[in-house]
Length: 218
Image (tube, rainbow, N blue to C red; front, side, top):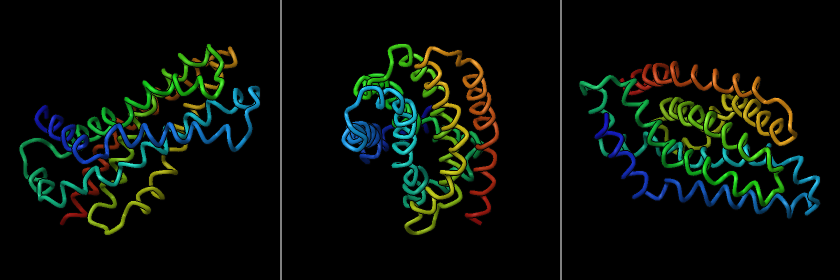
């Protein structure tokens, strides 16, 4: 499992689909918002939690189509099916590698980008906590979508259409945590809901992804 994780991390960095692409997209979205809604501080402060969460979610989508595509092309995906390591564990490790190269950099960059959107000072810590809890779910759900569309030519658009509805609960609770935290309200309830949702996704989605991948490669 450690060897598979290190391999996927190296491939993500070499292929150019790692943290650099997601961070650049996240930065561009954050910079464009003031141009589209105006520089009014009160308005930016009100929409900052939702915009930052939506930007992070869309940034995670950029590299989902590469989660299994490279393995299918070089034949290593078939080796994973017959390897001693359970396929569910292998897919969980690949989702972890995706989060380390895409989700984690977004989590660390979000508080700094929040300054650009006039996010209230109390909201930075809550934004960081919500993204740290929510982005792993985005990577694991993305792995499920990648397993559904593996082998389909130009399946990136289909992958996005399949995954985006599954992202909605995470987006709702994550943005609500940041919004309540920025407003000085109690954010513990949506934070607990977000944590429970992430734990459920991490526990169940690798099994669902492994099942659809086995059926798709028969």
